[in-house]
Length: 404
Image (cartoon, rainbow, N blue to C red; front, side, top):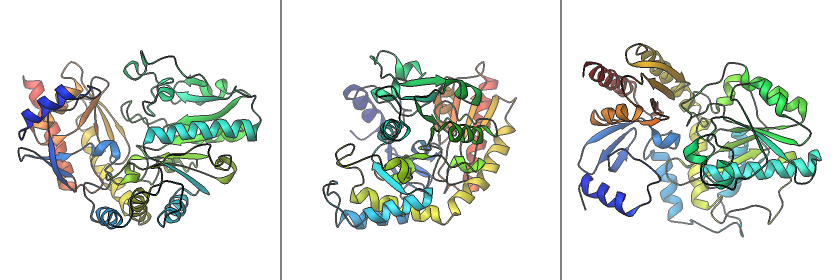
């Protein structure tokens, strides 16, 4: 098996069809570019759904991983290891929080946030036993575990996976008044994505996050920000919440925290929240392992320079300025912040997948969502020339659909 066609055929035949990949088989990658098994190069404009904010094979991250691989990869949390303290202190300083609870995947971090919020509600707020509720948003995407899909409004993620976990109240995304009406004495948290990525890179109106922060403070409810996709430099700030100067009670982090090398996730909160967790109540054998911590420490060092946030902001202006020029030329709407854009294609022209396949043929990798929307999220290390070239390929692809 050496060609793309052969590898795709076996993959489709021997694996569960829980994804619908574009027909490209990647073999090698450096920076913002990947190469398939047939030797063709592509500009990666998806970045592993923001897992590759710093590009493929960033030298500092790879160096940290190699060095740690040769020394120590796993201890379990039965013992301390020499990378752990630095990781907790570093991520705590980056988030401005007292404590860190590390896990592996983003979904695990969300599950951890849910458990901590409930326990905090019972032991600190005094919620009635077994009655805690968490307010969540329509259109959310926090993962695909059975608890998380219980409050998903996406039929593909939700339907036929019941019985569903109770304790969640759905409200429209972007409506502070809906949150206000949903809060009661047993509400322990509001779980919100500062920008809804999977829904199509939906950015709420200015002031929404600030109003959610103020409401949660007034009502004695935790504000939990899922920054798994939006955080760690993607939007031009360290966190998307920073655009409004908002500090949530709890950050949920993942994806780019692992530098595109290993799965690393965590929640960050102050001691009055995370202090409710005691030995034996939550954990993971691989959570906070030496290799994960070493890689994450390199990522944190990169973010502490501020260079990547500034670069995402600068290139984001270029991206959105050029994309807005396509409105009325095959594009209906453009949304996003920094190096992150949701582009609604005119549904009479093409589907998002058709446009994504057309871009692939032109050497650009992007991904569709919800029918006619495509997402662009190139690595922050992308050059301005390469970014402009990719937008040019989208422009030409749309023109071809219009002239068919």
